[in-house]
Length: 432
Image (cartoon, rainbow, N blue to C red; front, side, top):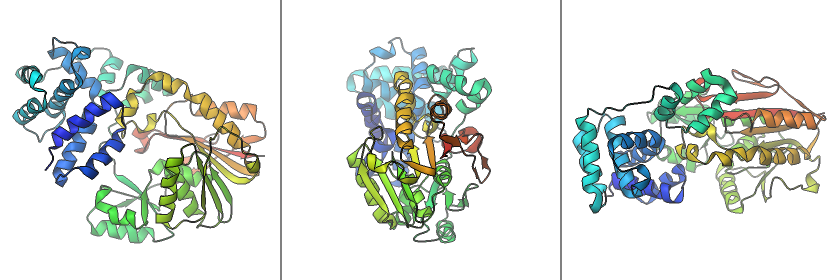
C-alpha cells in the first residue's frame, strides 16, 4: 500500500516545482495510488492543508529556523511544512507520529534539521508570535498574500474583506445538479438518503442537491448521467440565462461544460446550444459529458472567444460569457490559485472585456447576454459590465430573482461567507 504522507510530500514538491493545480493533482494521485479510504482522505487533507496554510507554516518555520526559507531545498521545506501542519491543524494525529513521519520523509542529509525544528516547536509549546497589525495577522492566519487582501479591501471595504478572509469552507458539501432528462430530484434525493449521505435541497433550486458524499462514493449516479457536480452559484448563473425549449444559445467559454449542460437540460434537450472554447482538448470533455447525460443539442466548436464569427451575428437568443478569470472566488477550494502573481490578475479585465464585447454581437434584438466569473474582483466584474453598458447603448441591464437571490442593476455577487457557495459574479443584459 502507498504511504499517504509520502504521496502528499511528492505532490507538494511537484506543486512548488511545476505549479500544478491541486484538484487535478489529487484526482491523478487517487486514481493511480493503492490506498484504503482513510489513507486517501489523509493524503488529500495533508496536500490541500499544507497548500492552503503555506504562508502561515512558512512564517512559523521562519521563527524556528536559523536558515532562511529561500535557502531550504523544496523537499526538506515541505517535509517541515507537513510536520507543522499536523502539529498545528490536526487533532487526531499524535505529536510524536507527526514528527517521526516527517523526519522519515526528509532527505537523509536534512533529517536532523527537520527533527530539530519540529521538536523545538513542541518544546516551546507550539508558540507562534503573530504581528499586531490586524491585516498582517489575518494574512498569515488565512494564508492569503497581502496583495490579494488589498484587492478584497478595495473591492468590498474592510468589514466584508475581513469576514471573507476568515471564512472557512472545509465543511463544503458536494453540490449536485440533477439531470431531469434521466431522473427526478426526488429519486436522487432518496438514493442519497438511502446511502446515508444526509441530502438537502438547495435553497436556490430544487434540482440542486447538497450532500456529504465524495465523488467516489456516488460514482454510479455520476457515471449513469443522473447527476453532475455543479456549485449552487454556477447553477444560479445557468438559471439566469433563462433558456427555453427551442431557443438558440451560445456558451462562448464553455469548458469544462457544467453551465452548458445545465442550460441544455433546462431547454429539455430541444433547440441548439453552441459550446465553444479556445482549447480543443477540453471540448472533448464537453462531448463526453453530453453523451453521458443524454444531451444531443450541444455542438462544440474550437474558437477564440475574442475573434468575431460573422455567421453568428445576431443569431442567438441568449449568449453566456463565463469568461476566464482570476478564480479568487474558489480559493477556498483550490488554494493554489491565491499564490499566483498579482500581475496575472491585473491583466485579465481587458481580455474579459474583449470577449464580452465580441460575444455581444451574437445576441439578436430582444435577446440576452449573461456575463459571469468565479472571482471576487470588481475590476473583473462590475467595472467591466459598467464600461460595456457605457460603450454599448443598445444594451441595458435586466434584474433577475432566483430563490432568495435578487440582483441590483442586473448584477449579483455571491460572497462565500454569506452564501456558503463559491464566490461568483453574474450580470444579465438585454439587447434592445
